[in-house]
Image (cartoon, rainbow, N blue to C red; front, side):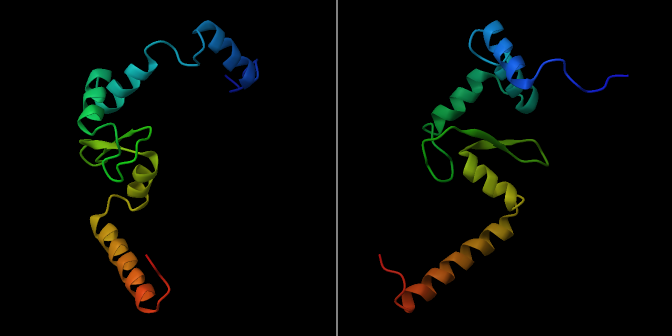
Length: 121
């Protein structure tokens, strides 16, 4: 029965893999395999999607490293987002009602602050 223990520490394994795979810890083709298996996308399709979005987040328009946003129920790809926007959608569980309620809350709070003279700008 395997103990789950390795005979080398993690830093040593990473150093070995960097040397073996030419400066990268990943095996050749790992990125391509990941997107194909996870989202059914080739790297070319991923690049086309990024190009169509101007290589910016579909929500905040920030130039950033982009991640694939997809519907967890259908698996359908919605677009590319920055990690922060993708995380926010996940925290709201992709619930449009919660997102609208949060937007209304922020807008009402801003109006209250403006009326009280607490927000300028």
